[in-house]
Length: 139
Image (cartoon, rainbow, N blue to C red; front, side, top):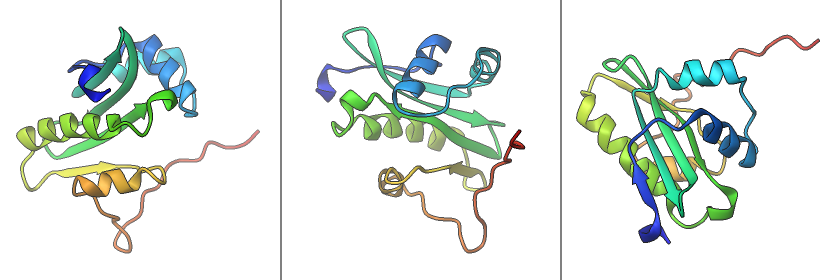
């Protein structure tokens, strides 16, 4: 199946980005935030099968000191076929060409995808540091 997938280096289209995130069980972002955020993508990868987007990944950051991998998603109907690995191969090839050894290259890993990311040289930052995110107040 991986041989049948068309890989495009592009920013995911907003509607497809939202559709794939929701299908994979990720939180929906507002249309406004999605359009604004996608416009600031440094590098994107989209996987298509029969003209349907079945995977994506993006790199955001400042392009020099900080590179952050986000939105690495594979359609649940296509998981377990090596598509996550294919996305990571393209993202990391670009990052390693653009970044130098002083850059921070990071991501937030959902379990069990951390195993995939470890294959690409990522490791846990603790105990020196931990990932944190702002928690919006509950109403």
